[in-house]
Image (tube, rainbow, N blue to C red; front, side, top):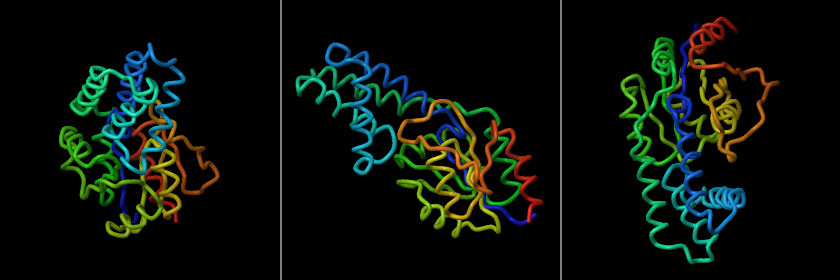
Length: 232
């Protein structure tokens, strides 16, 4: 088998993440319940997040700022300072939350490392992603870490060219960010579904693409790598 460069997403691929956003969103809806109906408030928050991605990027800090903006909008500027303080406190709780690895995360990265170079490719806030990687205990397994503002075909082309084996693969839970742009860059795209997907990350599986694969969990990755290694 030829040499691989294998990229791993971080959030909700190697450790839990999205569920903390959804729990905080529920708390936010309860906090503003006297000012706005729940589903309407959630829709406003999602629109604020969509609008702010190009300004704040991905991650907890941008989410907190979008909650504050939504609270101000939903109350016509009358949101109490104490409520804003509670929103900020929720953000601090998210940033301080301990890392909870997904099953077989370490084993999957270790198995990939035996096949070539492994690279963590994640988007979001630099400090928060560095914190999570350090707490995960997986940092020593990666040959390189790439924390990017977004995941596009150009992002993957650049990363795989820099860490290039003869074959490239991206493993992640997001079709929109981890799979589809990696396929466009000429790599294999391996989808590992996990939990709820943020609405802004939703996409249709590219089932007809010859380099697309879906596996039920990270435990199936070593077998898949071995299978692909015998293909021409």
